Amino acid sequence: MSGLSAILIANIALALLAALILWQGSQHAEQLSIVRRQFSKLSSTDPVTDLPNRATLHDRLTDALNSEGPDSALMVIELDGFKVVNDTLGHETGDELLRAVAMRMSSCLHQSDLLARVGNSEFAALIMREDAESRATQTAQSIDKAMDAPFRIRDDVINIKASIGIAPTTKGDSPATEILRRADVAMFAAKSEKQDSIRVYSPAMDEVLQLRRTINSELDLALMNNQLQLVYQPLVCARTGKVMSAEALMRWPGKPGQAGSPGVFIPIAEESGLITKLGAWALDQAMLEITRQKTIPIAVNVSPIQFRVDGFASSVEAALERHGIDPSFLHIEITEGVLISHTGEAQRTMKRLREMGVQVLLDDFGTGYSSLSYLQQFEFDGLKIDRAFIQQLDIGPTGRQLLKSIIALGHSLNMKVVAEGVETEDQAAILQLLACDFLQGYALGRPDVADKLHSVTRPEELLGNLHRNGGWSAAS
Ligand code: C2E
Ligand code: CA
Ligand code: CA
Figure 1 (cartoon, protein in one colour):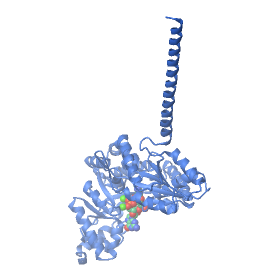
Figure 2 (cartoon, protein in one colour):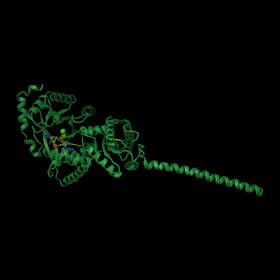
Figure 3 (cartoon, protein in one colour):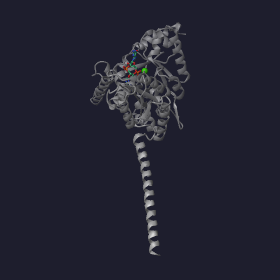
Figure 4 (cartoon, helix red, strand yellow):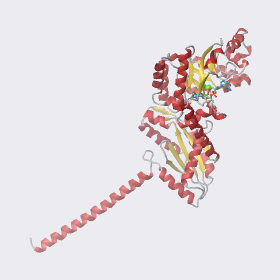
């Protein structure tokens, strides 16, 4: 090879090398930019739903607060019961549910709104339009409505509810973190209310939240120090007036005022999760009482949260064995709240309890929005008609007709029917004639310490007399 051609070849090789380096460089830059884009997508997007994540929402909220545009409103949407779905049906179903929920929510939003996933079961929507607060309320109502229909994920039918908190903002108001906190506080207020699942933030909510936290820690302490108590209210046979069973009701004697009533402290304990400990304590106490008196079954109220805990049926079975109790002495009262979010799991738990011989009763019948459909899906041993229906008896014949139909319905499904909150002799007499099986209420006996349970003689006198006198002809 001549010197010239050697130089030529060397030059060509050099040029090729340079081209290769350049080509690799551009490849590298391209790869780098892909990685950068992917990284930025990952850090700004929720991988499950592909929605913007909390960091992105925070940035957009900060921009909105500092911009010249219209005021905005932030909405936080929490899915009640999502954790149970995830824990019991698995993460894949949970993820699919989240995607389906995200789709439904998106369909309720305007193009200019931003929907983000900000926590495990928490979404947020930033509304950036004129009249943001009222638009946010309208949007929240459509989201709430959109959640009504069950989700069908794989073979499961899942009902899920949303609690929505709204925090309106004004320019330069507060940092994004404070607006997010307010929306969260409003969402908690919505969650703890049965009636309304949408709330707009007000400063008074901060105080309420603080109060609830204090009650919760005092309750925890009271439980540890053995300061809680169970009282028992008789359920009597409507025909004979005999005490057939008793319902255990929790009392907090050391706590004065409203906060000491289970109607107030049980929902607080449900929200914080303390109810699991409280409920286990109540079951244990009731079982001790069963072993002590061995005459009538005792009914324990079980919160939906406690009922849904994995292994609830097994823990009841173990406790029955530990106390050496015949399962037929234990009754469990649940409300339809148990059944709303995950039907399949609740069905299995109920089936196991009933196979063991524990009776399960549907409490507060008629107050929820789909009591009737639950009666078709679940087999209960009994149903307890809510006090509100018994009060209707005083108003006129419509109330009586309605009760007659509910009692007939219960009987047609092989259930015993209990009337709750019977306060007067007149109500007792009508219910007796309507063939209601059991009566419970102040007219028959108030909740009291266990020892008083068998000294209630009034029901037998009261109902025995009514029965002998042929009752009320007006009841037909
Ligand atoms: P609930 O299960 O529907 O219990 C019936 C409530 O009505 C009780 O209120 C009882 O004292 C009251 N009551 C009974 N007869 C009458 C009547 O003739 N008239 C009126 N006006 N009221 C009557 P209480 O004891 O304040 O309990 C309220 C709720 O707290 C219960 O409603 C139940 O949901 C919950 N609760 C009570 N103890 C427990 C418990 O140990 N565990 C759980 N998870 N919840 C409990
Ligand atoms: Ca009850
Ligand atoms: Ca009830």
